[in-house]
Length: 277
Image 1 (cartoon, helix red, strand yellow):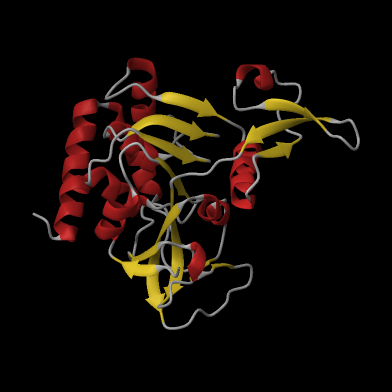
Image 2 (cartoon, helix red, strand yellow; image 1 turned 30 degrees about the vertical axis):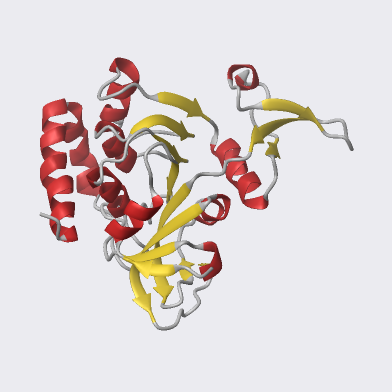
């Protein structure tokens, strides 16, 4: 089945359901903020959110009550400090308690790779000497049958939905990503369903050095959303809004200020954009 071109509100309504395991991936740039905001606007609940580096988009989703669990490998406001809505959920259960499953970057990446490869688990040399194998139910010891070496094993991760942002898609739904790449490819290949928001839809993809092409048959839906990564950036299209990351620290510290900001700048703005107010 080929990817279909659709709108962001329609894609989220169809692909993301309450209780789903949802991965919004993108590393440094191409963070799918617009898609995260649409999930907030559609009031999805009880999600298990997965992300290598949960930063502002997950702080917003957690603070707006979308999440019941976070599977992650590092969490913070890059270059600034803590995620205050994340901390409030963990420390005080507001707006809801948040279950945590923490991994290293390598551990979580290997979970995606195993899921994308159709394997039951991934193997890595990480976690050795840390005691984390005893503290994590999702990390186990395994002995190599060939060398006898003791390794760490992590279960395959297969999200219900993977959401990423990319620079371009063609009209057949083939997607191209370039610049810094994280685990977007692995997340899409591991997931049951996938949504890709893109800066633009073009007639033909001009292949870029070091770029990744996701063929149409591995993508469920594509939505054209210019600026869909802001306040992060899309290489070749936009720049990172560093001031916003700094300003978010003060906005997110106070519950009432956070809620007022989200209502004005995310819920109402997204609703107007969707033509539903």
